[in-house]
Each structure stands twice: as C-alpha cells, then as structure tokens.
Image 1 (tube, rainbow, N blue to C red):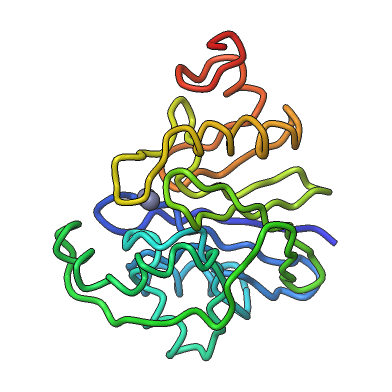
Image 2 (spheres, rainbow, N blue to C red; image 1 turned 135 degrees about the vertical axis):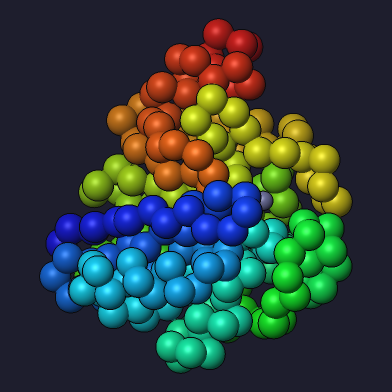
Length: 215
Ligand SMILES: [Zn+2]
Ligand SMILES: [Zn+2]
C-alpha cells in the first residue's frame, strides 16, 4: 500500500502540481492542477497512472487554473478545498487579471472538504487538515504511514505563505503551521505549493518565520 508521487511545476509561478498514485492500483489523484494540462497528462502517462480525482488545497488560480479542463476531459470529480475558499473559486475571472493569466474556464467543486475528512487514492488514505491563514479555506493532504504531506501555500522550504490577499490572516497561518502541521512530526516530508521539498523538522530548526527559537 505505497504511495508514489511526482511533482510537476506548472504555470509562470512554477506551482507544484503533484500526482499521488497508489502503487497497487495505479489510481491517482492530481493535486492542484494550476495549468499546463498537457504536461500533467504526459506525467500521468509516464507513471502509468489512471487519474481518478482532482484534489485542491486552495482556490488561488495558479493552483486551480487547469481544473475545469482536466475534469471535463477525463471525467474527474473535483474535491476540495474547504468551502471558505469558495469566494476565490467564484472569482476566477478576476484572478485571471490579478495574476496576468490567459482566461480559464470556471468550475464548482463536487465536494468541499473539512478538517478530519479522509480522501481515498486507490488503496491509500489521505487525511485532510484545515490550515487557514494564506486563504481561509486552505487544506493540506497528509499520508500518515509514509509521513508525506502536500501543504500547498501554507509552508515553504525556508518561508511561509503570503497573507496579504483578501481574507488572509498571518496569526491564523502561524497557528496552522505550529499547531496543526508541526505536531505531525519532525520526520514528515512535505511538498510545498512552490519550490523544493523539506521536512517539518528542518523548518522547525531553520525557517526564519516559524522556527522553534523564533518564539
Ligand atoms: Zn496561494
Ligand atoms: Zn501558489
């Protein structure tokens, strides 16, 4: 029951779209398909993966821009984020202008996620953790046996998510990282929404925003 993953940087923001594939069944979830759908499809084919669903960490365009196209082409359900990010998804047309992207098709998630939910990828179960701050409805996906998390724009290798967007909240973000992510364990490896992977332990030691010695 192993999970295999691949990170595909997409869009001008080098957003990390991640494919989580169940090794037994080859069924896969596409997390945060921000755009560049052809690149994502090529990665699925290389992995021998059969996409079964789209998972979204939050409603920002660079994480969701390819969602409508992928969902309709491959008949995939759209799952997540938390409903508090609905206002971002409803405002995709404005986000296109804000981020300077080519227009994308709108969509509505088939299922919103809540803290404590689980989502299935083949035989692999992922835990959903609500981690507001960067956006109010941001969720992360955590696989406990493999100690692997996809954390979107909550935490980065050496940095944290921006909180200067509408309904962003710095205190909420710090609380999410310290009280919900770090307690999962120092060994946990995470894939951020942008940039290189890290572990929670490394960020507790050296992240200038949330390290233990920063108080
Ligand atoms: Zn974001
Ligand atoms: Zn982002």
